[in-house]
Length: 132
Figure 1 (cartoon, one colour):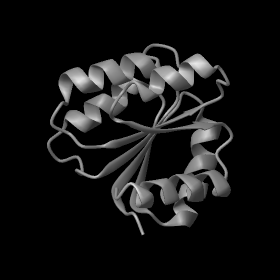
Figure 2: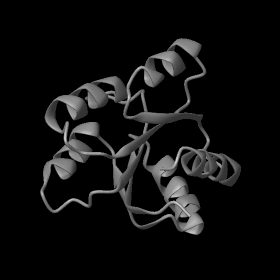
Figure 3: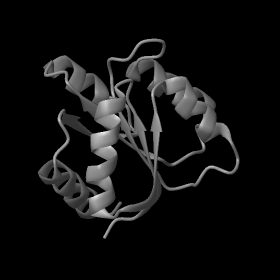
Figure 4: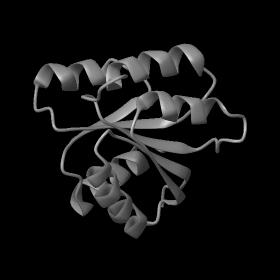
């Protein structure tokens, strides 16, 4: 099974993070799950040399301060050497958001909220198919 050193939940809604943390904890694909209410906090943590190298990031698009698109742009600019896997997790049903997300090479999936066990298993299956 695909295994990551850590999972980052980047979403400004603490309730979503709590629920998603519990769901992802049941799947067992990472030992540690971290929650960030702002994209800039997650970026700061990723910039630390002590951060695990195999990180799966679930990223919301619509956040105040730094939205998901700004996070992706800053991530690519500041951390080009990192090989994290990013999945957009958003309430957006706009096809243009889905298209824009897939223009980022580092984005490997786009899931609509709410996160469910079926969506997690489907995403993990896609990772396995792609050899991730």
